[in-house]
Length: 406
Length: 144
Ligand SMILES: Cc1ncc(COP(=O)(O)O)c(C=O)c1O
Image (cartoon, rainbow over all chains, first blue to last red; front, side, top):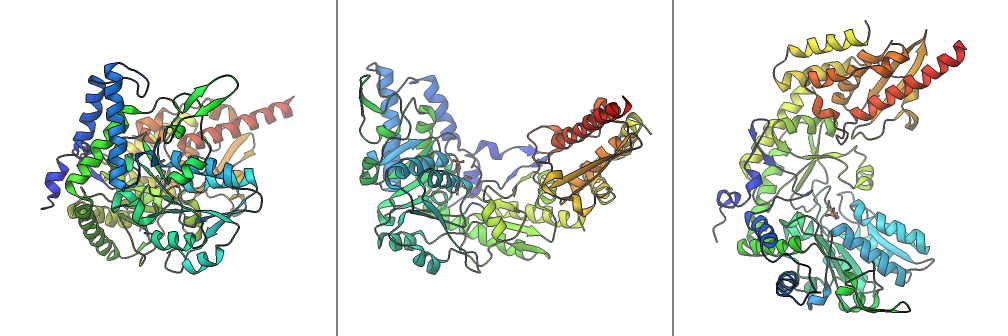
């Protein structure tokens, strides 16, 4: 297939606008991606046609909406190669998925003296839920340290694994630095001790093919909105074994089989974890996003993105006084950098005026920023609709920043 | 100069610039001339929350007037807080409390006024006015 970025850009209406009189350069894809027209159309079509509640009505529309909803689940299942559709729990987002695991798994399996392992590179969404459940249960939170090159220290990790370790929760790709973690090795190492592994794939699924059976991860969490789909939808993949054993997370309608005032029987998987009316329109819209990605092919996307990232790294590295964080580490999609001793907030304010959307600050990953002893960074996060010309525009803006704060 | 005059003066200065770059260059200049607080005040107690960069503001009462000093680790933030200091500092508490801040809009920095902006301009203003309220009460107690 011929990867034609100009053709692809036409599919994303939000890319075609001017900000402060300049064409928008959208480099904040790690925060959320733009949506292709097919996704936008699907959502509006849903509301114009089959809008109705799912899983409860016998009427025609309700069945159509339910079919579309379940079709989306099946598509997600196929995309990540889960063994069963019941292993795909629809949530509100990666944060919601992680909270579900921390809360339900923790309630069942964690007790005083147990240990939970996360890593130094985690987003707050994969730190705080574990802190909270550890506090509740008396378990201890352990953190995989970083090597000199800002990768996870697997030797240290090996030593941390022991009988008290009940779960490992680790990110696939770091949102703050773009570092790709060796999750395959981590999963194997943990499984040698029969310890389950939850992968925070919020950034991971976006940049490479994810096959949960090949990975053999026990849980994999992600958000639709970072993966070209609508906001407000997420996925928790979990092996049947664990999901069956875990207690429900939230309770209410939809997740029950029968309710009397004395006793409630919970519904089967995945409905046990899906209480209340779900975000039907956006779940259905997410299927369109997955189809769109499949049509282009994640392998083509990866090749293009890796090339663009390499181009960006070379261009930015050449700027005097610019320092890329975690420079030698394997990366995907993200260049996180500092310019001399200019505060990221100052740089970001000026870069914005060039119509370029970057993120500045600690990117919800304060611990790793503290470890690297930086006040935050400027982050350009790329998608397959970004171009080399846009990188050149970023370089131009950075040079201006350097001049203004000289 | 009173609050109104200082604000008018700033509006006049900014009217000389017609593009954003000049405006920001000027803010950066202003950042460099900010009356800095003593290092000992750069503690959490004086830190203003709600900013992506760190901003510290201290205030003391000198001859019935409030004197503000500040610092930040970001230069643009220093420039912005210096604008506030030029308007608020050396003014009686009451004038600070009642100050009309439409000048910020007039100089084209309104975008920074939204409470969701990460620079915390709104928090700085709130904090400075809060200092003024405290000093006003103190003056009243002394006067009684
Ligand atoms: C690595 C990582 N994990 C979790 C999240 C949380 O995702 P959401 O806000 O969509 O729940 C993010 C979002 O920035 C992320 O980058």
